[in-house]
Amino acid sequence: MTNQRSHPPADPEATRHAQRRDEDLAALLERLLAQVPDRTQKDLAAESGISYPTLNAWMNRTRGTSRIDPERLRAMVDVFRRWGVRTTPREFFEAVGRPVPGPSGDEREARLLKLYRQLPESRQRALLKDAEAMLQVSRIV
Image (cartoon, rainbow, N blue to C red; front, side, top):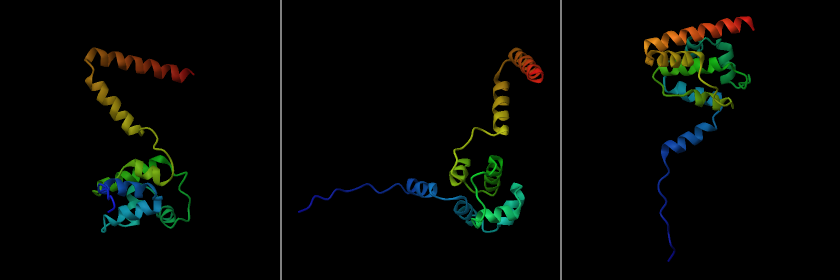
């Protein structure tokens, strides 16, 4: 009689994530576009501010993706999210073989505003004076 050990079933979400890490940008875009059958590559290009020939070249793997501007990748994420597709910047950056950079300018600005609003008014005024002084110094340098 053999001793059979039971193995817990694999976590389906972990399995899907592992498979997705191996996706290139074309495979990622194909998968995400399939989730919105009423949308096309042309829609994605138009709404994300990318020319259709460029997007199509990425989809056909005839143009490299390693040097895509991070803001273009973030723009595609934003479009898919508006369309109701769950995705993350990490998926896009992994698909082009790059680490996710720090927050975008909009994200940094929103964070700064949130922190500013939590300060008492006297500290808000002091922060504004400090920021103005920093700006003056950066203009001199």
